[in-house]
Image 1: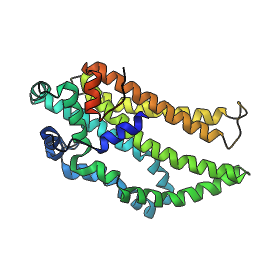
Image 2: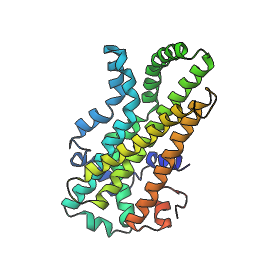
Image 3: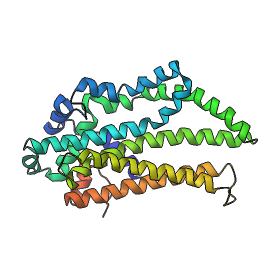
Image 4: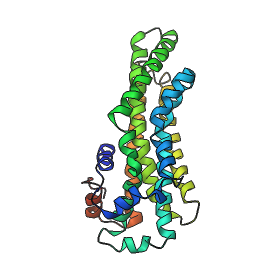
Amino acid sequence: MITRRLWRAFSQPPMNKPLFERVALNAAFSPALRSLWWNNLAIQGQVWLWSLVFILDVRALPLMLLSGTFYGLLWAVGVSGTILHERSTGTYDLLCLTPEGTFGVNWTICLGCLHQGDAFRHVNSQEAWTIRLMLMIPLIVTANLALNRLLTNSPVALVWMGVLVVLFYFDHVQSIIIGSLFGLMAPQTSTSGDTRLWAVAGLILGQVLSYGTFFGVVLLSPLLNLPPALSPVIALAAFFGLRECIIYTQIRSTRNLFNASADEMRLALNRLPDVA
């Protein structure tokens, strides 16, 4: 799966590269807000925000399901903005002349943005996922009771709950990947200040298409006479499959935009399979 391989590449950045260190440690490149403090609050603080929401009003807890979209938007803005900043300071063309090549430089910048202030590690740490799962328990129980009122067959409600948990995880991982890749691609199609808007628009379009597919399968399942317990599983498979296609298309488009060879991409993306 291309999602798993890209996620592994995101989790294993080139720590020894000077460009990665410069982007990851320099507050001037912080996503959107130009401050590592605000960056940490915006990205890492999301882990604790849902705990506060749970204390204040449990009814707002379903918003946690949109946290993957939030992370994707932040990093889409951050990656595209950082590349745009490099261009405005006149260092971008010089960096692209290094042996890494254009794609290698842009990929390193992308990873540097992801790991600014150690944000990527904190957002995906065991502690963060423990908090998310603990908060999802009351949400699952409440939704299960509500679904049991609508669905007399209890196993169907349990299947739905399992599907929603897996959907939350897929959305978290793939939204970050899609947002980062759109942030990587947008500066290559636009060099003006609307670069960030293109990156954000691309992510939102991907979210609308994937969630539209998920709910579309659910709504059409009665017309197709699908078993009630099978409908959410098929919808989840369609959601994940469409996301895989989107990410694969992004990788193909990225290769074409940067005119990168398959060897260059495999080297930069930690042995990503051939996308030719």
